[in-house]
Every structure is written in C-alpha cells, then in structure tokens.
Image (cartoon, one colour):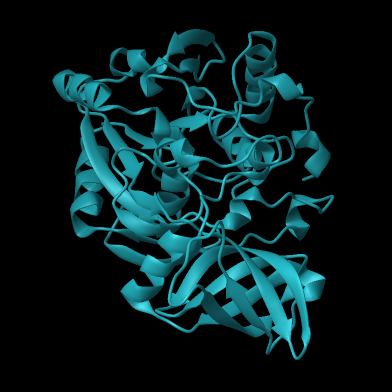
Length: 359
C-alpha cells in the first residue's frame, strides 16, 4: 500500500510533553466497530469492558538506553550518541549510532555523562559490526548485571524524538516513562498505552471481573524510526524479542473457547500475540524475535479490542491501528481527536478500538 495513505496533519501543540496526572485522568476516545465515536476518560475503562474480558499487558521495563560517548580511533576522537535497541548477549547490544558516519568496526567508544562515573569514570565498548542505517553491534567490556548497573549510572531515559527535541529528559521521566507493572528489564521504549494505568484502576477492573494477564515484548528503538519507503512492501521492521508464558497462553485459549474477548493494552502486546498465535488463533508458550509488520488486509487471529495511544503520521503503528479498526474509521477518529484537543503520542491520551470485523 502507498505510505501516503497513512499521512495526516498534526498541529505541534497536540504533542504531549508530560503525562496526565493522575495517569488515569487522560482522555479516552472509544472507537466502536460500527464507527461511532465516544469521548470518555481512561478511568471509565471498567464500564467499557465486559466481565470476563482478558486484558493483556506488556510488563517490559524501560532501561536507560540512551548513551553519549567519545569514539576513539587512534589519536582521533569524536562525540557520538548511541541508542541501544536489542540485547544479543550478556555483553552485546545492537544500537543506533548518531552520526553513524563517525563510527566504524573496530572503534572504541567511551561512555559517561553529567559527572557520573562507572568503573573508573567510563563504560567502554568496541564496535564489532557496522550495519545499514547507522546500526552497530557493540561489545561492552562488562557483562550481565555489571553492565546493567553501568547503564543505570551513565545512561539516559530514551525519550521519543518528538519529546526529546522539545525538552531535556529529567528525573520525573524515570518514573513517568515506566508502567506501574514494569518487571522485565530490556525495553528502550515504553509500552505507552500502559502508562495510563494506576493501582486504583486495577482495583476497579478487578471489581468489574476483568482478568489481567502479562506478556513481555522488549520494545526497541526501531519503533521510533520513520517509514522512508513510498510503499509499505518496501519497509523493513526491526526485530524485537518477546515471551508469552504457558499460563497466559492457557488463559487466552480458555477465554477464546468461551467467547470472551481478548483486549490488548498497547500495540506491543497485540504484535506479540499475533506473532505467537497458531493459524487457528490458539496460543502456546512462545519465546523469540518478531518483526511482524501489520498493515490493512492482515487477518487478526487473537485480538478483539485494543487500548492504544495516538500515533505518528505515516508510522507503522498508525498502519497497525488502521488494519485493526479500518483505515477510514481511524482517519475519522484521528480527525475528531485533533479537532477535540486530544493529546498525542507517548505521553498523550488513549483510545479504545474495537476490531472492524471478525476474520
């Protein structure tokens, strides 16, 4: 499909730079299967779900994956910024280096910032490989828990570019850009639909009889990359690693067999379930990498409804929600959201989408 079909104009003032407070006071646009739109708030979610519905959350935890350092090559040095996006070994990460032209295989990079220190004032890595688009494979001098500790000391919260370009990251982001149920470390971007949930909202969902289960998909920095191709067939997704437990798989199978709905919180949860599902829509325990790219025409096998934020023009995520709820329906919903003052992107408001049709 043509990528320009997924374009729209978004005023700068609609981009949220801070989350709603409290989290569940954010607005929620309900987009029903028949196209009806309803303005609510996230706190109303229990009344919009049915007893027995399964909410599926992504429990990945964001790490300080944004690093600034000095590249050293012989006597020459240059400043580079690096965003980690996928761990491949206890001491190795795939990352995006900027500017990529300053980095080559064999280079050493010394990381550190703001007077913080780690291991005598630096965290060192070697560039093992250089790939397309500024992607590099880094081998750090420490591994496992020692590397995790080092990243906590020298890393920054990797705020999305549309926020980072407007203000600096600060201490508030360390908690704001993390779901209350984050558990499995490894993400470099938050599963942002989950940022709206609070303990009070969980209690209300429990009282409603809505079940809660978790999967893990470590969101990579590739989620921020623009679609530069003119046709969706020419766009390549970056892989992300995930896991669906046997317990969650069994709960989904039981719910589907009894006609209850599977409601994903966030596109990351949806992408993982659709990657892990068998052809008939049943689930089993699953671990691995997925680069699934969902565009209109995709046949959904598992998910019946989706809680998600408002996404960028021409992005893979707007393509996904258009596949889920229908392109024209989503264009109308986004037009309504823009004209009604909804806040967009990672710290913005949410929506509740029903699948356009059973497949």
